[in-house]
Image 1: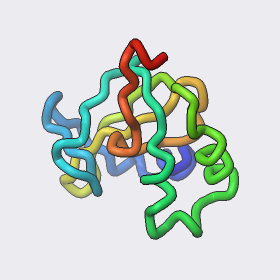
Image 2: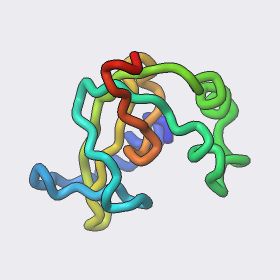
Image 3: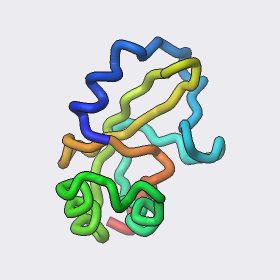
Image 4: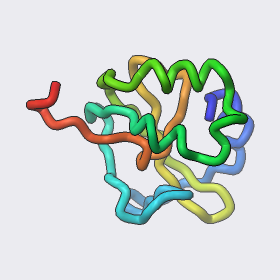
Length: 111
């Protein structure tokens, strides 16, 4: 999801209490990332989604070119229609938002 699409929806975002988050569209046990965590994209998981063929070509190029790269997370919290979520953007490439379930936490020894 691009930031321009996100900004159009931001008027529907409401404040939630810390800890009340659920990753919309994903499992409730998805990892809770923190700002500054180092992550890799779960490229195969992202590409298996049914909407992959309709995704923006620049997004697809970015995903395919990021297979082995490590990024730093910056989080965005909110809720739409009563469903809270926590999206993540990448400090190094802030154009795109990701569900937390699409990011894999990198351990210090992996860097």
